[in-house]
Length: 315
Figure 1 (cartoon, rainbow, N blue to C red):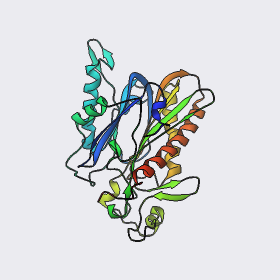
Figure 2: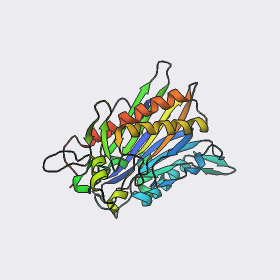
Figure 3: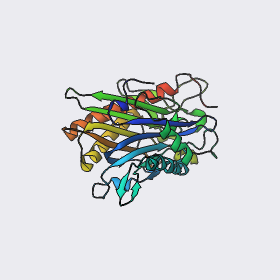
Figure 4: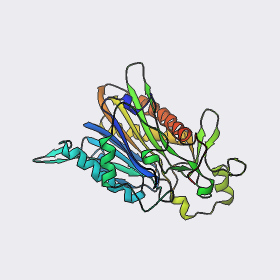
């Protein structure tokens, strides 16, 4: 649990559903009063649902939840449970007598960890909503980060655990930027203050990090394992943003991944960041985006530190 987190932004609730045996799960970000949203898909292997509606020229103006989930493309089905939860509470886009919840969703690939035949489904998405709260956020190997891994360039026997992390920053003018991130990259996680690898591909006997970039430049042979990646973030703020501005914040927030994951945004990562505006405070978009990148970086570091604090891999 953490005291500096995305729920510092009023109107946000976080809920996890975790399948501990299958090592998968989902994490829902509820914004039941609606949030202006933008998205930036920077990786080239994404699995997403309802991201097109966030484009500034599209009709939908607000979303009611964002779902981050394991299970690769199969896990997109968990969004049906989030929609059911919201519809039961009459939360969504009102179209005459129909209420249609808007739930953009993105997945990570975790099918090679645990039982890959068990994936987040409609019931798991619903359960994540039932436990969603604005009181605390559990981090590490939980929810969508349960089966997340870091540093898979030479296979899972060399990888370390990924996970869920969260952080926030409050500016002097009262604007809050909060982030939750699911860390599951091909590459290594770097502490940008030292330049050192803190999680990634490593030699199991010596504990020495192999340095994914060096492996790629010297002896990289692409395998099916190389496609099993993706890091996802949701940025939330109480600043008033349009869809265009929220999209720009999502774009700038990707810099936080670039600072902490080496390499990121590859052909085999589906790196995706959502940005949510839930307030009315006036703000400069460039300031929000700049701070968002810093907070994303903090959430990435927390995710892998919490996930690996027991020193044990899944096997």
